[in-house]
Length: 599
Image (cartoon, rainbow, N blue to C red; front, side):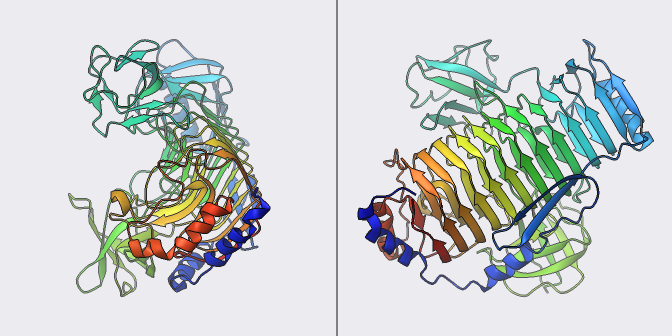
């Protein structure tokens, strides 16, 4: 990190203050050991393998196996002007019956009238769909390609998108939207209107949206947009994924899925979504979105629940309407039943089944203990299910559970490019990770978040994660109060109301074992690196220039609602603001932080 010699004394105060004793680490250490135990992929066979040295100095390996195609049939199809869905479905049925094989789609345009899903890849094993130059065009918003109950399936060279754009361009003219092309129908719901660039205005119109008037107006007006502002208008609300992996029921089945040089042109939901699957998903050489607006309405790549072995490599995420990459896992609401023999679980992400090991946590996300599922009742109308275990449920307060099969562990995000989006770049909420040699530019918000969030019911926490060699330039700012934001931010939050009605930071570490090194940060609205809620973190050889470009509102350094906590942090706050390094380390929620002299 670049700094002037006159700030040396202030920086010394920062480092000295950062490492004051934090709350007890025993529960954090126990969960860290559990969460990071599976450093090596259990998969064996031909396919993609990636290995690296973890932040703890021990090797981590992931694997995604390739289809076994020798001796299996090859089917070739050519596109027709009509609906190509039935022909593709018929070919897939033949490959399913044969136990695998190759489907070759010729270059050209492939209209798909049915759906969603437009194409169902269900029950397939050892299948390659090979389609360089094949452009699938789905008539219906929602899942384009849905993969379920599948093993060793590879898509190569396909381009997928929709006949109707879910995000359209317009400009603000007299308080109305003047569309660049054909205007949406009057009465069409509008969910977001956003100006391009890190400092652009934005209005969010909720799950129900607001109806577009015949003159391009919206009820309540267009807020703070200046006349003539070019904007992107979002016309959909979370409609699946252009490519989605989602096993039915609660148990993960699908594994070893490879998306090789696939293009996602647009989507009314996410680009690539892993809602429920086992281990093994590789995205290599992909292109998601494109220039000229947020063609993908929401996340580029989103993991809801997966076993792990996740690889995202040499891919472009351009103009996504939400986070470019989010590696998450479920946090399940849980409560001990009377007598302690069972636990009631609830929530849409409560994926449990006999044989699953659950880890239980209190309201502060501190580990209470583990137990193996013996049986569970069906969900009641409110989505609750009573779950029984092979051994007694641990004593103590139980508020949440995590399924140890679905931690999204072992992941590598390497050599990707994320640009010009209404997004964060990477959210890493899982153990045993590598985020390396990626480029971030023109993001609406900050580039990298390492976290877990009880408020969002997401994440196992960032444990044993390396963040190295990334380049961040021209990124915007996060606006939520109650914490310090930076291009690379580490934090953990609980449920409930904190400053400004937002989720509060946890009082202690919820992430551990992080190595943040050799990152180059240049021209960002807030700070460079901010570390809260973490233990055993090393900051080394990072460089930062031209940070804090727009630190006025919201500030780089957000105050806490708790006056006593704010006063306790005054020495560190003073060092942060005066030191000129752009590095914030929260003295109250961190432990064992090693930070070198910033450059």
